[in-house]
Length: 284
Image (tube, rainbow, N blue to C red):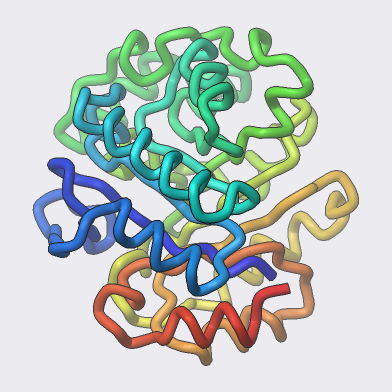
């Protein structure tokens, strides 16, 4: 299992949200490049880099771009083999190709891929507009999925380097920076993405993310059991949301289903977990 430290960016600073709530944000003083350096020195094989404002607004600022460049430069200088998975606001094929060409190893995508899948499987624009209105937001296709045929525009090699974000709470999935939820099962979406040629998934329990309440094994296990029959078609399953300490890593290892990676965020910054020790102890 890869132990994947997270670096989330808001207002060009390292930050963590509580359950994805942009009104409950904690900032940390050191720079993204500083944490990249530390995680690589600790032996991390992959780093999780998320632009929170990008997820919310649907695009990256110049400040975001500079941070991404600094992180790539740092990892190339210290250990070019360390992988970077980047997410937050990447919603066009051209953006995907751009980041993959500049040193990003994997691109994390959620809303822009999920909207076309939802429209293919029973939801209408009117349905999505209603769900967005319930969350106090306007649904604009040009923002949420600016190229509605994006899946058809991504070739097989590109799809192998995309990690599909399946963010869920109970029996619903999150869209638009988790501000909107849609009643559809995560395991159903994973099956549909497999059929479209994707094979990497990041499964996040929104209810636990950023809470330090520990991994909730029950809902994670439920999703994993439901996709067990297609496991051979899945190249990578990464879990995130709520990791507090080593016991959570032990629990994930004992779940009876091969998990390829775990993302750890707030526990690192609030020092409830020794990330250097966890990498040394649990990383393959």
